[in-house]
Amino acid sequence: MADITLKHVTKQYGDVTIIDQLSLQVAHGEFFTLLGPSGCGKTTLLRMIAGFIIPDTGEVHIGEEDVTRLPAHKRETGMVFQDYALFPDKTVYDNVAYGLRVRKFSSQKIDEKVDRILQRVELAHLKKRYPGELSGGQRQRVALARALVIEPRILLMDEPLSNLDAKLRIQMRDVIRELQQEAKITTIFVTHDQEEALSMSDRIALLRSGRIDQLDTPEGMYSRPLTAYAADFIGGANLIQVASTIFRDSQTEVSIAGGQVVIHRDTSIEARAQVANTPSQLTYQLAARAEHIHIENDTTTAARGIPAHVVFRRYLGFKVTYCLRLSDGSSVMADVPASDDPHKQSGDAVCLRFSPECRLVLA
Ligand SMILES: Nc1ncnc2c1ncn2[C@@H]1O[C@H](COP(=O)(O)OP(=O)(O)O)[C@@H](O)[C@H]1O
Ligand SMILES: [Mg+2]
Image (cartoon, rainbow, N blue to C red; front, side, top):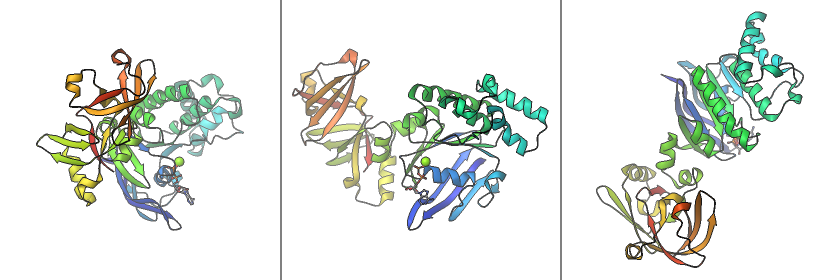
C-alpha cells in the first residue's frame, strides 16, 4: 500500500496555476525525489504534503487516511528545510529535543533518543553549542537529527544540501541515504540538482510547470527520457532536429542533417506522441547523449556516417569533449574516453556515428 497518495491536487495563486491536477503515489520506505528547475512548484507540492498549504482541489492521503485538511503538526511528518530553520537561542541538544518535549516524552527517554541520533550524525560532542557556533554542514545535520528523532512516518526534505559546499554536499548524500535506509522511512526529497536525484533516489518525478513530465527510476530517467525537456534536464543530451522517421520492427531510421541514424525502436514514445495528439513526425527530436556520438577514425565506414566539422576540442583528463558542427549549422557535443582521443583540430572534417541507444523524444 502506498504511504503517500496525491489525487489530482491543484494549487493556484491568483490566475497562475502552480500545481496542475497532479497525482502520484509513494510506496512505504521509498526514497522519492521531486526534481525540476527553480519555480516549477516543488516546494509548493512538498508543503501540501506537509500540511502547510491546502490544495484548492484534490486530495492528499497518508496511508489510508485523507489528510488534505489535517494541520501539519498532526501528520507525523518530519521536515528539513533549505535554510535548516533551527532555533538560534537553543543549543544543539535542545533543538533536537524540541519535538520530543512537545510530544511529552520523559526526560530520560528524551536523553536516550537525542544522544542516539546525535551520535548517528556525529554531533554528540557539539550538543552544548548554539547554531551560530556551527558550520553549515553541522547545522544541516542538526536539522536532520531534529526531523528524524521523532521517528516520523514520513520525512520531507526541501533542498537540504543546496547551502553546502560541493564536497560536503556529496558526503551528505550518503549520510541521508544511509539514515533513510536504516529506518526504512518513506522520504520525499526536493532538489533542482539532477546528480543528487540520480544518486539518491528510488524513483524521480521530474516536474515541469506544476505537472509531472516523467516519473521513473534514475536509470529509466537517464536512459529512456520521453521528452526533450527530460533528456536535456537530466544529463544535458544533444537535441537534434529530425527531418523524418521510418519505424521498422525493432529499429527506427531517423533522418537528420546530412544523413540517417538507426536507433533501437521504443514504441512507448510513439504511444506518447499519439496521446499528445499532434502530427507525430513534426514533434520528434533526436536525443543523443555526448557519450553516444562517436568520431569515426576509419574513413571506409565513415562514408556512412554523419558529416561534421570540429568547432573545438576540450581535454578534461579522463575524457575529451568535442564540439562539432553538423551540415545544417547546428552543433553537438561528443565525449570520447581520453584513451580513444582521435586528436582532431578545429576545422577538421570528420564523420560521426550515433549509437543505437540514442532516442526519439517529443519536443
Ligand atoms: N505564496 C505565493 N504567492 C504567489 N506565488 C507563489 C507563492 N508561493 C509560490 N509562488 C509561485 O509559485 C511558483 C512555484 O514556486 P515553488 O513551489 O516555490 O517552486 P520551486 O520550489 O520549484 O522553486 C513560483 O513561480 C512562485 O513564484
Ligand atoms: Mg523550492
